[in-house]
Picture 1 (cartoon, rainbow, N blue to C red):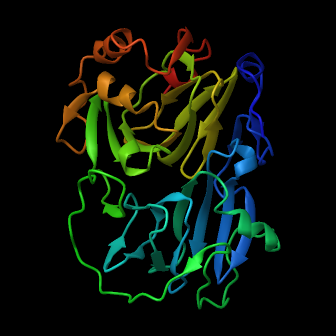
Picture 2: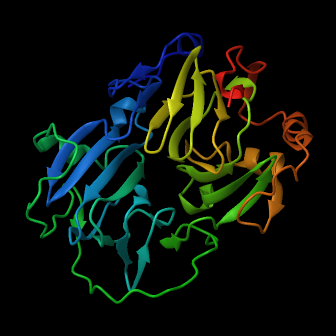
Picture 3: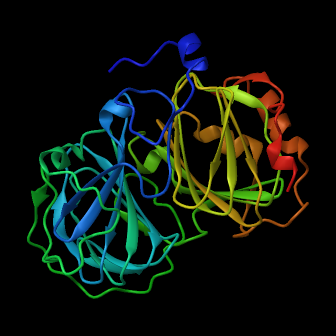
Length: 347
């Protein structure tokens, strides 16, 4: 589906509480979206190809202890899985890890992956690009409930449209998994690791760079202290997706303010004017950016750091503005100062 032109996009208020069916701004509170149940797992779809112009799709997978998805692969989709709540064991061919909130696993096209929920109410995000990996759920009946059915069969089903693989489920190892690979391959990554860049009262951790996803997207975890709205801006060539992991984040999108709390999702397509502010200590935001064209922004506006958390007041705020001025080819168009309604300043 064709996205609205830039001027039209500037004037679109975000759709609230529903998938829009077209690539426009929208917001979903935690637990909302299209819900399907297969193999004892509740899939809550928060983005489909039709909602993102074909760029990606995404769903939360919620399940009880013991529910599993056998080894399977998609030939045309790069995928990342992020553990939000509980714990899960994931397998790649010949290796396995037990993952907890903040940990992730990244799976190239054609690479088999399997998982098993290790605690009740385990919640995992699947993000895949391009869109279409979740299309098979459309053949499953929608459910109205927001929890999986108690006592449902948890024997495990391979996602529709995926290829099943008969591979051994090896025992997990306890590797640190704190670095990104040099290219596109399957890998695990632990919480608060990856390649890190310091911002004023914040640190950005690359969970996946373009080199790891075939250029489809970058994934960044931002840990931040309370801070006011940034400048209003938009992007011409990439889409931004905001998922609150902890704390509170105000999003200002085309003149509308929306509060994100843990589990909430906001989709800002190219052309949507936006800003954000943080209003709680130790807030964490998962940013999923499609494609990878905005990746250099975090490098030139931040300071490389080996620290896993920020030191309050350590980084000079002028570093961000200086990086933007020195790199005019970044995909960021500034349209004005911070929003007038700075609700975030009244902490």
